Length: 366
Image 1 (cartoon, one colour):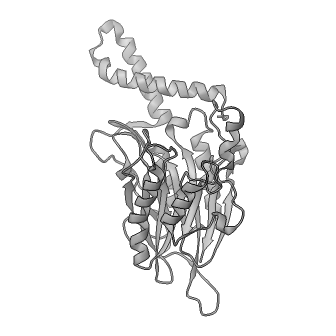
Image 2 (image 1 turned 90 degrees about the vertical axis):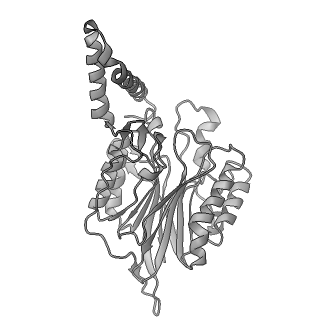
Image 3 (image 1 turned 120 degrees about the horizontal axis):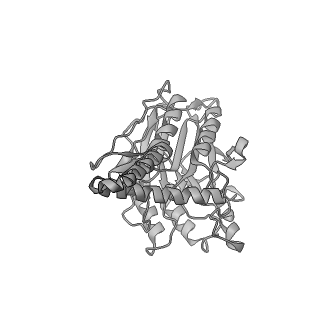
């Protein structure tokens, strides 16, 4: 689908109508008079459309839904390549943090989710990443129905590449709405089970905001505590991002600093280090919450590059269209002694579409 096209808008409208028809058909279809049987047939067609195109499936009313989390193939016992500096026991790991732009309520105006995810996994397969931290790879639940197919397809592809550690996304999935969209992929098994936490203060209505963190073993015998997060994009309730940053530090940073662990916290913070969203105060507060970790994409490392593409929403016009394209809202806070950082612009070349509205954070840590 071409971004912003009329066809994309029509498909989105059909998605909404199909979902409405399925719910109505499920509740009222059995009680229809014989002369109205054709309505049941239409509900059946809608159901077929939803199950074949959107992969909506019945999951029941239980708290935890069924989900295929692949076990992974091959993999490593621990992460890291030896640092060849004489006398050094350090190891180097290569990491990607990527917002994959798979918000289900935005799919009517963005390029095809499946094409973009396929292109992204193709790119990942060519790289020797030890860890991949993903944001916005959502599950969607509508009561007893859920859409999990795209998550399962992406996870299966990653498992086939040797990512044997895959965090379970279900603990953040509400009965209605999207989960946090956060996933950790590791080429080694996790040293401790991944923990998922939802922010206690949030202004989001259709998806959960929070963080996922776990320990991964390094080949020099140490442990790396890795965390991915996605903060609110809104400013209400008052101080929401500050309070979320404080919770992130309290649960995913401070205990591990005290234990002397190596730490990595990366993701979509929705806080701009260039001051495009405010006067820079929010980033100063975030940096203080993460201290003494260093943001390897922050202003302390030289000129800051934008990590967010220009606004893709079709109803945004004028100067606002390009405003987000100046925002540096993705960050990676680390305790590493040395690092190399880059930004990756992943694309589905054959279709000439971008894989995400965010650039990928690609970095090596020693």
